[in-house]
Image (cartoon, rainbow, N blue to C red):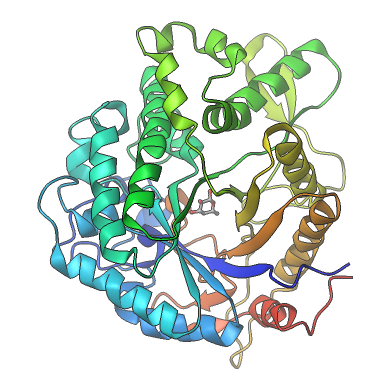
Length: 443
Ligand code: FCB
């Protein structure tokens, strides 16, 4: 088995996780600046103020990618760097930064893939209700218009959102991500407006970008019952509705799953649910970020609670996420079967491990190499079963600010020393490089 010749090999990052220069050159405050500066929200009090200092060091990072031989770079744009208050006045220095970045990516022979929203909402818009305010559909269209006009001559591949599930549920229900709310109604409003904003942004991208290709990045995960106990089955079905069908049904069918709406109950009272039809805009591809599966067991006497029960002997990453490559094959084939046909890209996949420090320029990360081997073989298996999977972006190019985990969790194939900003490719980067060059097989 081999990957198709035109298979796209990429690496992915996100603006707030790597750029730093958080309040420099006119960039407005974002919800992660506010959240990470709020005591107790992020491990060790870490913030993205400096991160990988990519804002200044992007030429070095692009050179590292060129050396890896990746054909594509998925990055995201910081909305408040471009429009500091979220709407209205532009920040020329911010636009210039993305110009320089895109030019340097293109000059390295790498195709840029841009994500419009990877969670760094302008704080000024959060102050006006953020994703819970219906006006955000228009604000997002305005931002999309500005940035696609500026970059659309060179950037042809666009994603609207990264993982709207996380925007809504981690940010508005569980409170573990910015803006840190724990409000069920706000969660559903955020889902609703984020998905409609996607639907309204795609035509803006097409209008401004000759030869545009557009889509959204979702993070579906298998939600399985631990046993055939009716309560486990019910929880797995609810998990599937909330994490998978809520988003896939919206963008492919323009409707919400009826079982989820029943669960949401009063929390969605008064919301014009039919408007979700606007989310089902025709796209060129679907991005899938894939990390894990859930095996749900009920807790007697607590109908709302579920615990994860993995088989004995299961291996986990440093995030305590199960390592189970077959889950990726299962998810890709299911999406293709139930929602396809559409080109799919794995827009993120990778793992955090407790890597050793660089030793004479070498970082040994055998578990990450094994992880990548396993998941890439799983991707290959999906292709063999007919899934139009066209590319794979490893998460992540660099160790970076892993949201609520701060700098503790390292997902990079390139090690970053956050004291000195020195970059050291790990063994996994060298493996990826050989694989891309056709010098490595997965076997
Ligand atoms: C995804 C995010 C990405 C990174 C990885 C580990 O949910 O899109 O920014 O945090 O998880």
